[in-house]
Length: 473
Ligand SMILES: Cc1ncc(COP(=O)(O)O)c(C=O)c1O
Image (cartoon, rainbow, N blue to C red; front, side, top):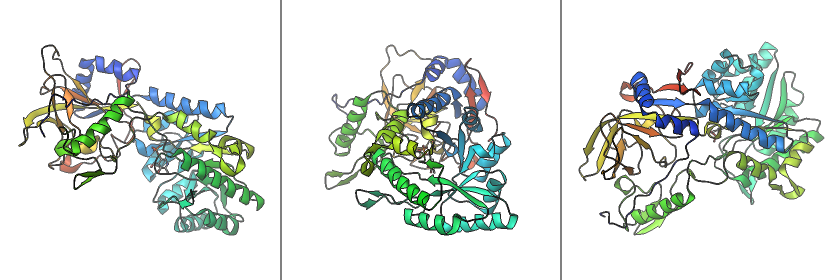
């Protein structure tokens, strides 16, 4: 369908932290950084990261809770953030041998680390034991491996047990992780209680998705288990409720709502496309009927970070008739969280250079960037934030144009964003495109080196807008 006068472009305006706004005004510095570091470059700042830690600390203090924040390193590979978390008195959640080794080599003590890796091989378990890192046990084979290590070496180790399969409205929340609550009770009472080397310190869970109610239900079910264990003389010092705290990426709720409405109209053929080849972003069209919702992150939401945590803590714990925070405090538990994405909110941008403009066979404008799709990739169907076009052209007497951003991998699907982007002026070769708020997962989680492309460099922008090289990958 051809665009009509009614087919307005739908903006999705990103929230920009002041450090990003300041940097965007310094076009020469951005250009110089790309020239020095090549395209694309990840520019990051520890300022928002510190603020995000402080936001969670404030909530814990408000409810008088003993706490520990373990930054989930998997969300960004730069060691700098792990060091900042430790310097703020918090800890780091490590998910691989290298993540743990780097933290230890950086001087972060093992007491401030936890190990949640999905696959824990023998060298990883041995390193954790050697440095007194709390090991989160997920399954019996993992337990047996650790048991052999500590018995063979006659050394102690501290463990938490990962639990899952919580009930929500009589339905089990499905997961591939952890022990059921019943199994956890059995191994704790039968195998771990009198273990000569293993010290149990608590329960752990991490839930997929962003449900406050599910988290509250999971906490209550953990508390029930903690009480049953206490009756058997097994004391639990901490409860770790994992990550998954929402981030709000967008300025305006109306834009978010309008985007959903207009995407549906577009897919139904009632207006021009908002996405390349009218991609439904996860919805299904069958015989003119549209099913489902776009499978995208809730980029706009009103319950982000500290508010999200606070809503969990103030949820009413159903059979107890008390808020969650009171249950935790009454048992003198340390409440641990493992935020990744939300600690990195506003902590980074990805900048790439425009290399070509062309039209595809359908007449769409394609803007080629010197980067590839894995260097700014979401696990959601699209990253729904407007990128920012940096150009020296004046916008006066220019007409806005729209088109799509494409990258360097030789696939028909190599679109950096599926969404059609509006440019205030026609993009020029050498102009820059800035993708905002990419530090959490977007810049590192999926990056690959197909075609032998180099990985992007990572630099840190300090308060004087000076770019420091990232220390170690
Ligand atoms: C065990 C565990 N903890 C913490 C996290 C971090 O989650 P988020 O970045 O959504 O806060 C994850 C993410 O997958 C995880 O698997």
